[in-house]
Amino acid sequence: MQPRPREITADYRRRAGILTWSAIVVGALMAVALVVSVVFLVRADQDTRNAAYGYLALVLWVGIAAGIPVLLALAIPAARMRRRVREQGR
Image (tube, rainbow, N blue to C red; front, side, top):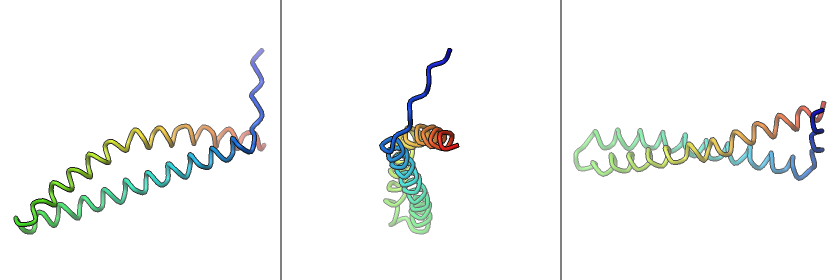
């Protein structure tokens, strides 16, 4: 006999929503950082006096790489929680 799953409360639904929106915001920031880093690389490539932009692009890439585990830590539990909420609603 399997244990019965606990009832999904309003607090659980709210936390699922917060995690989902947090994952969306982190993903959007990472996408913006990727676009900005490409712009920085293009600017650095156009003129040698703008070489510092290449280093700024590298810093953004490090930030993106550091953000991937954060995104996963938010998105995976959010997806599981949202699925559980959906299944409970049926």
